[in-house]
Length: 384
Ligand code: GLN
Image (cartoon, rainbow, N blue to C red; front, side, top):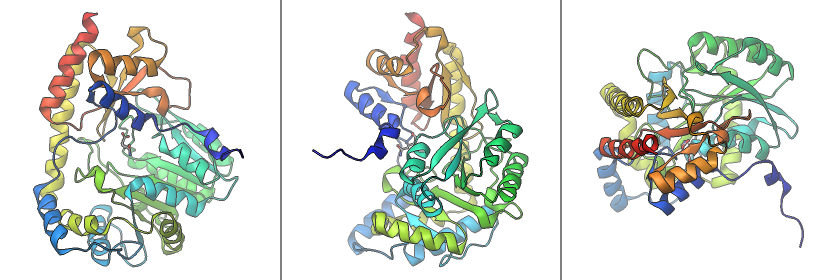
């Protein structure tokens, strides 16, 4: 038989999705793949019922329904503070997962380099390779996970086509400051590099941190490709509604790639989600308060158990240090944790370029009772 594609030799299957399968196998509480176990806002569910009867049930415009793009442009304009033309600056995608790969394929040629901060969300390596590009990694240094300015400049000196910026970041919950973003923007302008952002946690930022949209900073919109989704903001990860916002020329390319990859995001779900895009400011305040409370509940619990972690500034993940357990293989540790303790986590090594295997990633996007039960189970860790 002919050999299958060797593109896939360069990355493994998703460890995050694999941990969900392991969680299901052992019936563990799934704090690995980041998604809520609580319902989306009732307005969305009620609207979905209405849409089920009234439609649409056929293809929408490939780059997103007119009404969805109009409402999305209005909402993002309010938060990002920039002018967004729904006809020229938006492509609606199947989640930000598609938005990211569309963005990468729209800007990269085979052999191009792409800067990725490490630790990073695992999709970025696969995205880069599928787009024919080569990732170059710049470490984010614990405990603050700041980048070293010189190391970043050296990466830019390799003339990358793009930099990928996850802000707030997965898996460490770092929220990049305006100064850090301005420096990234300065280098991007100096070295003529695109910046592809993944901002799916834009509305989950803990006080006193503030989310700054790179695209909103002076002189950087033209080279920023902002990707995000409705998944985390409205607790609808399964609806797969994401988008790319960028300048008209970039969007022309993104429309083409998106059209041939998926044709379009689900028409009924676009229609049903529009009510969310219409929510007032209070919804977003309430969302962040909810996560602020969950973060406190979960981290207080980890403190009581005596587990060490890095406190996130945003998103809903926490990297927990497992050095004290003496297991050198974090993957084995996670499998054991799911099977014997009944809690599923993601092995930290899946997020790092560096040889790091003393962390696991847990998330707290769960009902309070789920988090309390998970903490009760984790207590057993110290009773061994
Ligand atoms: N972003 C989520 C995570 O990091 C889920 C990603 C996914 O599986 N699509 O767990």
